Image (cartoon, rainbow, N blue to C red):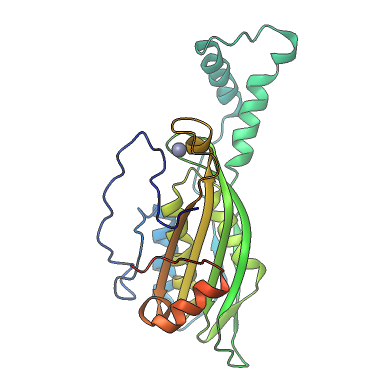
Length: 252
Ligand code: ZN
Protein backbone atom coordinates (compact mmCIF):
# COMPACT_ATOMS: atom_id res chain seq x y z
CA UNK A 1 0.00 0.00 0.00
CA UNK A 2 1.23 3.44 -0.82
CA UNK A 3 0.25 6.78 0.61
CA UNK A 4 1.28 8.89 -2.28
CA UNK A 5 -1.48 9.70 -4.76
CA UNK A 6 -1.05 7.58 -7.83
CA UNK A 7 -2.42 9.06 -11.02
CA UNK A 8 -5.61 7.43 -12.17
CA UNK A 9 -4.62 5.46 -15.22
CA UNK A 10 -0.98 4.59 -15.49
CA UNK A 11 -0.97 4.97 -19.24
CA UNK A 12 -1.49 8.68 -19.12
CA UNK A 13 0.51 11.65 -17.94
CA UNK A 14 -1.32 13.28 -15.06
CA UNK A 15 -2.08 16.97 -15.26
CA UNK A 16 0.11 18.95 -12.88
CA UNK A 17 -1.78 20.10 -9.81
CA UNK A 18 -2.94 23.67 -9.95
CA UNK A 19 -2.12 26.04 -7.13
CA UNK A 20 -4.87 26.14 -4.58
CA UNK A 21 -7.03 29.17 -4.04
CA UNK A 22 -9.85 27.36 -2.21
CA UNK A 23 -13.20 29.09 -2.45
CA UNK A 24 -12.46 32.58 -1.27
CA UNK A 25 -13.75 32.04 2.25
CA UNK A 26 -10.47 30.71 3.61
CA UNK A 27 -6.91 31.00 2.52
CA UNK A 28 -5.82 28.38 0.04
CA UNK A 29 -5.92 25.12 1.90
CA UNK A 30 -5.99 22.22 -0.46
CA UNK A 31 -3.54 19.35 -0.58
CA UNK A 32 -5.12 18.27 -3.81
CA UNK A 33 -6.91 20.64 -6.08
CA UNK A 34 -10.13 19.73 -7.76
CA UNK A 35 -11.75 21.13 -10.82
CA UNK A 36 -15.00 22.23 -9.28
CA UNK A 37 -18.24 21.46 -11.00
CA UNK A 38 -20.70 24.33 -11.56
CA UNK A 39 -23.05 22.58 -9.14
CA UNK A 40 -20.45 22.68 -6.38
CA UNK A 41 -19.67 26.32 -7.10
CA UNK A 42 -23.34 27.14 -6.71
CA UNK A 43 -23.52 25.30 -3.40
CA UNK A 44 -20.47 27.07 -2.09
CA UNK A 45 -21.71 30.48 -3.20
CA UNK A 46 -25.09 29.89 -1.62
CA UNK A 47 -23.50 29.08 1.71
CA UNK A 48 -21.26 32.12 1.55
CA UNK A 49 -24.15 34.45 0.67
CA UNK A 50 -26.14 33.25 3.64
CA UNK A 51 -23.69 34.62 6.12
CA UNK A 52 -24.83 33.78 9.61
CA UNK A 53 -27.96 31.88 8.59
CA UNK A 54 -27.97 28.10 8.48
CA UNK A 55 -30.97 26.76 6.59
CA UNK A 56 -30.66 23.19 5.32
CA UNK A 57 -28.82 23.03 2.02
CA UNK A 58 -30.30 20.94 -0.76
CA UNK A 59 -27.57 19.27 -2.71
CA UNK A 60 -28.77 18.40 -6.15
CA UNK A 61 -27.02 15.91 -8.33
CA UNK A 62 -25.33 16.90 -11.55
CA UNK A 63 -27.92 17.96 -14.07
CA UNK A 64 -27.97 14.99 -16.39
CA UNK A 65 -30.50 13.81 -18.93
CA UNK A 66 -30.68 10.02 -19.09
CA UNK A 67 -32.01 8.45 -22.29
CA UNK A 68 -32.00 4.75 -21.49
CA UNK A 69 -33.15 3.67 -24.94
CA UNK A 70 -30.38 5.62 -26.63
CA UNK A 71 -27.90 4.22 -24.10
CA UNK A 72 -29.10 0.70 -24.88
CA UNK A 73 -28.69 1.23 -28.63
CA UNK A 74 -25.24 2.71 -28.09
CA UNK A 75 -24.26 -0.19 -25.81
CA UNK A 76 -25.32 -2.65 -28.52
CA UNK A 77 -23.23 -0.77 -31.10
CA UNK A 78 -20.30 -0.56 -28.70
CA UNK A 79 -20.33 -4.29 -27.93
CA UNK A 80 -20.82 -5.19 -31.61
CA UNK A 81 -17.85 -2.97 -32.50
CA UNK A 82 -15.79 -5.00 -30.03
CA UNK A 83 -16.77 -8.15 -31.91
CA UNK A 84 -19.15 -9.45 -29.28
CA UNK A 85 -21.96 -11.55 -30.71
CA UNK A 86 -25.22 -10.23 -29.29
CA UNK A 87 -27.42 -12.64 -31.23
CA UNK A 88 -26.88 -15.38 -28.70
CA UNK A 89 -29.97 -15.85 -26.59
CA UNK A 90 -28.25 -15.21 -23.26
CA UNK A 91 -26.81 -11.91 -24.51
CA UNK A 92 -29.93 -10.41 -26.04
CA UNK A 93 -30.68 -8.28 -23.00
CA UNK A 94 -27.07 -7.39 -22.30
CA UNK A 95 -27.14 -3.90 -23.90
CA UNK A 96 -30.25 -3.00 -21.86
CA UNK A 97 -28.71 -4.38 -18.68
CA UNK A 98 -25.52 -2.47 -19.39
CA UNK A 99 -27.44 0.80 -19.90
CA UNK A 100 -29.37 0.29 -16.67
CA UNK A 101 -26.26 -0.67 -14.73
CA UNK A 102 -24.38 2.48 -15.73
CA UNK A 103 -27.43 4.66 -15.15
CA UNK A 104 -27.72 3.17 -11.66
CA UNK A 105 -24.03 3.70 -10.91
CA UNK A 106 -24.41 7.34 -11.89
CA UNK A 107 -27.78 8.00 -10.27
CA UNK A 108 -27.45 11.19 -8.29
CA UNK A 109 -28.75 11.13 -4.75
CA UNK A 110 -30.08 14.57 -3.89
CA UNK A 111 -30.22 15.09 -0.18
CA UNK A 112 -30.66 17.70 2.46
CA UNK A 113 -27.62 18.72 4.46
CA UNK A 114 -29.22 19.70 7.74
CA UNK A 115 -27.05 21.24 10.43
CA UNK A 116 -27.72 21.72 14.13
CA UNK A 117 -26.49 24.21 16.69
CA UNK A 118 -23.49 22.92 18.61
CA UNK A 119 -25.26 23.61 21.90
CA UNK A 120 -22.93 21.55 24.07
CA UNK A 121 -19.91 23.26 22.60
CA UNK A 122 -18.34 19.97 21.48
CA UNK A 123 -14.92 20.97 20.23
CA UNK A 124 -13.11 17.71 19.53
CA UNK A 125 -12.76 15.93 16.23
CA UNK A 126 -15.84 14.24 14.76
CA UNK A 127 -14.78 11.45 12.42
CA UNK A 128 -16.66 8.88 10.37
CA UNK A 129 -14.20 6.10 9.51
CA UNK A 130 -14.25 3.65 6.63
CA UNK A 131 -17.33 4.88 4.81
CA UNK A 132 -17.57 2.53 1.81
CA UNK A 133 -17.97 4.14 -1.59
CA UNK A 134 -17.80 3.23 -5.24
CA UNK A 135 -17.78 5.36 -8.33
CA UNK A 136 -16.62 5.34 -11.95
CA UNK A 137 -13.28 6.74 -13.00
CA UNK A 138 -13.97 9.31 -15.64
CA UNK A 139 -10.99 8.27 -17.75
CA UNK A 140 -12.09 4.69 -18.38
CA UNK A 141 -15.62 4.52 -16.96
CA UNK A 142 -14.45 1.56 -14.89
CA UNK A 143 -15.24 1.15 -11.22
CA UNK A 144 -13.08 2.38 -8.45
CA UNK A 145 -14.06 1.74 -4.87
CA UNK A 146 -12.77 1.93 -1.36
CA UNK A 147 -13.35 3.72 1.92
CA UNK A 148 -13.53 7.34 2.96
CA UNK A 149 -12.64 8.81 6.34
CA UNK A 150 -14.36 12.14 6.83
CA UNK A 151 -13.85 14.33 9.85
CA UNK A 152 -14.32 17.87 11.06
CA UNK A 153 -13.56 20.06 14.05
CA UNK A 154 -16.93 21.59 14.94
CA UNK A 155 -17.50 25.31 15.13
CA UNK A 156 -20.96 26.64 15.85
CA UNK A 157 -22.78 23.95 13.88
CA UNK A 158 -22.73 20.18 13.77
CA UNK A 159 -24.49 17.75 11.46
CA UNK A 160 -26.03 14.31 11.70
CA UNK A 161 -23.35 11.65 11.45
CA UNK A 162 -25.08 9.82 8.61
CA UNK A 163 -24.69 12.97 6.52
CA UNK A 164 -20.96 12.41 6.27
CA UNK A 165 -21.61 9.13 4.46
CA UNK A 166 -24.37 10.71 2.37
CA UNK A 167 -21.99 13.45 1.30
CA UNK A 168 -19.48 10.90 -0.02
CA UNK A 169 -22.25 8.98 -1.78
CA UNK A 170 -23.56 12.19 -3.31
CA UNK A 171 -20.30 13.21 -4.94
CA UNK A 172 -19.52 9.61 -5.95
CA UNK A 173 -22.62 9.51 -8.17
CA UNK A 174 -20.85 10.95 -11.19
CA UNK A 175 -17.77 10.06 -13.21
CA UNK A 176 -14.93 11.03 -10.94
CA UNK A 177 -11.27 11.24 -10.24
CA UNK A 178 -10.26 10.29 -6.73
CA UNK A 179 -8.57 13.64 -6.25
CA UNK A 180 -11.68 15.61 -7.19
CA UNK A 181 -13.99 13.43 -5.09
CA UNK A 182 -11.75 14.03 -2.07
CA UNK A 183 -11.79 17.78 -2.57
CA UNK A 184 -15.50 18.02 -3.31
CA UNK A 185 -16.43 16.30 -0.05
CA UNK A 186 -14.01 18.49 1.93
CA UNK A 187 -15.03 21.77 0.34
CA UNK A 188 -18.75 21.07 0.58
CA UNK A 189 -18.43 20.26 4.27
CA UNK A 190 -16.32 23.35 4.80
CA UNK A 191 -18.68 25.69 2.95
CA UNK A 192 -21.89 24.43 4.52
CA UNK A 193 -20.81 23.71 8.09
CA UNK A 194 -18.13 26.35 8.58
CA UNK A 195 -16.21 24.07 10.94
CA UNK A 196 -12.81 24.97 12.35
CA UNK A 197 -11.25 22.26 10.24
CA UNK A 198 -12.06 19.50 7.76
CA UNK A 199 -10.16 16.33 6.92
CA UNK A 200 -10.99 13.82 4.20
CA UNK A 201 -8.97 10.72 3.31
CA UNK A 202 -9.93 8.32 0.54
CA UNK A 203 -8.34 4.90 0.09
CA UNK A 204 -9.38 3.25 -3.14
CA UNK A 205 -8.60 0.52 -5.60
CA UNK A 206 -9.04 1.45 -9.25
CA UNK A 207 -10.05 -1.39 -11.53
CA UNK A 208 -8.57 0.51 -14.48
CA UNK A 209 -5.24 0.14 -12.72
CA UNK A 210 -5.59 -3.31 -11.13
CA UNK A 211 -7.43 -5.20 -13.90
CA UNK A 212 -5.86 -3.72 -17.01
CA UNK A 213 -2.81 -1.72 -18.03
CA UNK A 214 -0.12 -2.31 -15.41
CA UNK A 215 -2.39 -4.76 -13.48
CA UNK A 216 -1.17 -3.43 -10.18
CA UNK A 217 -3.32 -5.85 -8.21
CA UNK A 218 -3.72 -4.79 -4.59
CA UNK A 219 -2.40 -1.27 -5.16
CA UNK A 220 -4.30 1.29 -3.17
CA UNK A 221 -4.44 4.96 -3.97
CA UNK A 222 -4.68 7.32 -1.01
CA UNK A 223 -5.74 10.95 -1.33
CA UNK A 224 -6.31 13.49 1.39
CA UNK A 225 -7.64 17.00 1.75
CA UNK A 226 -7.19 19.06 4.89
CA UNK A 227 -8.73 22.46 5.46
CA UNK A 228 -8.58 24.99 8.29
CA UNK A 229 -7.05 23.94 11.62
CA UNK A 230 -6.54 20.38 10.47
CA UNK A 231 -4.20 21.71 7.85
CA UNK A 232 -2.43 24.40 9.81
CA UNK A 233 -2.07 22.81 13.26
CA UNK A 234 0.33 19.83 13.25
CA UNK A 235 -1.21 18.36 16.41
CA UNK A 236 -4.80 18.41 15.05
CA UNK A 237 -3.53 17.05 11.80
CA UNK A 238 -1.68 14.20 13.52
CA UNK A 239 -4.74 13.41 15.63
CA UNK A 240 -6.92 13.26 12.53
CA UNK A 241 -4.61 10.86 10.71
CA UNK A 242 -4.24 8.73 13.86
CA UNK A 243 -8.02 8.45 14.34
CA UNK A 244 -8.46 7.77 10.62
CA UNK A 245 -5.72 5.12 11.06
CA UNK A 246 -3.65 6.38 8.18
CA UNK A 247 -0.17 5.19 9.25
CA UNK A 248 2.10 7.26 7.01
CA UNK A 249 0.13 10.36 6.20
CA UNK A 250 1.32 12.83 3.58
CA UNK A 251 3.21 15.71 5.12
CA UNK A 252 2.53 18.24 2.33
ZN1 ZN B 1 -9.33 4.99 -14.89
